[in-house]
Image (cartoon, rainbow, N blue to C red; front, top):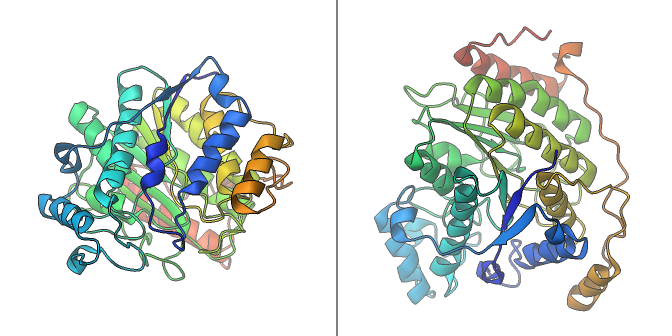
Length: 395
């Protein structure tokens, strides 16, 4: 598929910076953009770059409370005395002087990406600095100050979109986005993540299916620790395409946290770059098949900042441009040298981990003694009937 792509970027997005010891290092997005540029992605005729404006208070208030926004502003003015009742000043969410401006710019970037698609300026759009899916309307959570993806979805609904589907591939449950749209039948939120029994934020179980009047619009696949490429892809294909097709969205929004990788230090799934690349392609196909091609993709989590994040998200942008990168492609010499000089690390030599993911279809049957299959089946049983689907039909 050859597709027009708008990439939203500004060096100022690296100002979202909790400090040198925090896991969410902004250098990861800088390295991603450098890798994509070195591989010639931004020279493709179908790819354009766009600059974001910071999200205004009016825009932020589509999701966040005025009291919380004011608290973030006060924290920026006095970082030594944050208001802990808003989740600020914690180990996860330390305060820094640019905390409001930097966070608002991430929101503005995701809304700019949403706008590019909604106005038909590009079929697809990406904000790799986005995907801050844990922020709640009235508090910070999980490295996330403002919830850029939730604001972008709310903006699309305000513009007249009748149905928006959100697919969250981060290793952590997309709890903030789910919470914002819990009672809104216009937004379908699907999250595939490591089970909350083993990982922050401790939520995202199959029985979380949406509030009154929106039953079935919250979907959670809670995966066992150790799930790798094949199992993860089995779960995706057993749940996501069917529900997105039933929902018939006008826009597909996706979060591509790459902390599901086997090298990630904060979680316990074992996906490879190759499995993640396969997932990007599956979401791309869904956008064309079910959402008229309108697709907004964001980054998200990802804490192995050299070996994983730059390759995973460069593959994402290349896929969205309709020019996927051959996994065997060497990483450019200038990029590897930049990594060596800046971080004193050896960068990966190729765009692959050498894996060949395979999908075992759900229709081939499932094992009730297998934790992964029990998890998939629980989600299908909880949600499929609410969309008029038979959870046993593929068996």
